[in-house]
Structure formats: C-alpha cells, structure tokens
Image 1 (cartoon, helix red, strand yellow):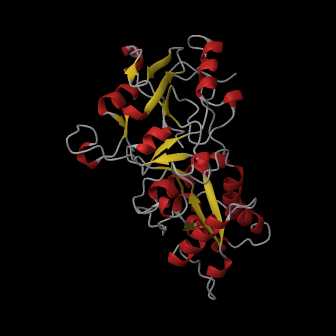
Image 2: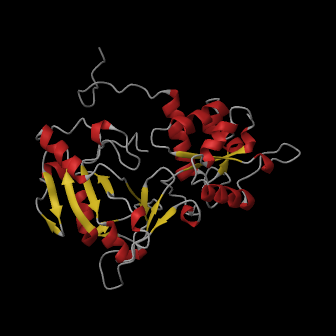
Length: 330
C-alpha cells in the first residue's frame, strides 16, 4: 500500500517514468529555455535534434535519438513536430542548425502537408532507417514563451470569418478557482508570459454541463475535461473553471485566432484602447465581452457567467485556496 504523503496526508506520488521525464525536459527546452541554454532555434521554433541531444540535461541522462523519436510518436497531445531534412547535413557531418533555409523548407512542408501524410509522419517514417539525429529538426507545437519564436508566421493556421467552415464549434480555456477573480478584475484573458493564450476544442458546453449534472457537487474532481475521459490538446485535466469563447464575436472585434499543428487554438489577444484600464502596459487581452459562458466544473456550481454577467460568485474558500500544484504543467 502506498505510504501517506506527510505534507497533505494523501498518498505519495509515484516518480515520473523516464518517458515522461524526457517529454517534460523537451517541452521545457523547446518552449521556454532554448535561448538561455544556448540552443539554436529558428523563428518557427525548430532546433536540430543533434543539438537537442547535446543539451546537458538530456546528455547527463544519456537520452538517445530513439527516445526523442518515441517522445514525438507517443505524445498524447502531439506536443512535438518533427521535420526530416537530410539535405541540410554537410559533408563534414556537422549537425545543421535550424537556419533560415531549414525554416523555409519546414514551412513549405507544413503548408503542403494537408494530405494524409504530414511532415511529422514522414519524419517518423524516415527515422526507422535514417538514424542520424543531425538529419532532423524538432519543435514544440505550441506553448512557447521564447519571444523570437513566431510560429504564426508560417506554421499556424489563421482562423478567419472568411472561412466559417474552418472555425471550431467549441473554443474553451481551462483555468482555476483562484485565477477566475483575477481574470474578472483584469478585464479578460492575458498571455501571462507565453506567446499565446491556449484554448481547446472540447469538451463542448453541453457535455461539460451534463458531466457536472451526472456527478453532483464535488463529483467532477477526478474526471478529465473530455467526454469519456479522452485527452484534449490545450486543456489541463485538472482545470476547475472552463471559459467558453464566442470566437465569431471575437474575430469580428479584431481578436486574432490560430490553429496549431496539434489542434490547439491560440490567440495573443488584442489591444483594447488607450482609454481602457484593460491591457495596461501594452498587454493584449481577450476581453470579457467575448466570453460566452463560464462554468465551474469541480464543485458542481455549473454556470457562473453567461452573456456578459456573473451569475454566481465563487466562494472565498475556493478562490483563496490557490491553484493545484503545477509540477506537471505541460
């Protein structure tokens, strides 16, 4: 039987598997730490796999090329994209950096990969026979805080009102009890250090409300945000508050939205205007007036905001409790 956790009285958390440890390290490096760690990374977020393997944190754990490939192939949320670029290897066998040429080639491949085989799938297939790390580039599909990475320049699909059939039916952001009053006070959602605010395309509002109704008060604490417990890219399993966005209204207001390679919806927000207290210090926001419905899904409150009005204020014992530990934030 697992031993009690002395800090909280619960059960001790099992150590992360090697696969999870490697995946988290890759996410850290490719989303946030590349520049400060001296890793060459291009404006689309690509770095050479040989350079990644030379990073001290992975090198000290003797991470192999096969394990990098496995991290790309098995990620439940498709966190990484891979690009096969054997022509970039020099005659001296030095690893090519993620330079402008490779950036252009990767962008072209992503553009042309509307067919069944994507650039990542092609790279994974190539990895079965070509085992040279220097022949591959890798990137995080979203979640960057590195300001030099401008994925919207080529590898994100811009969503527009001109193509309504491409707009997702559901655009939802997951957050926490303690964060919701701060969102209200600040006038909307902000990037908070990342390049984009992240949204998922599920669960749908009817599914989320049905899940709350079926479990009753407090009954949702162990469930994941998707119907039938499926993993949804762009949504934390432990999200307590779900903010549903009216994407058409937001686009009409001039707020940009993008779709990443793994289906996450992203937005940097919009400028509100110099006369508003929202968006001070040059911060962009997704304003409250494009919030459609907001629900609390863990304690059974259900709808707490609808069509511009707060229906129920969350009790202070929830909002002052603090967020769940973010050790596993990915």
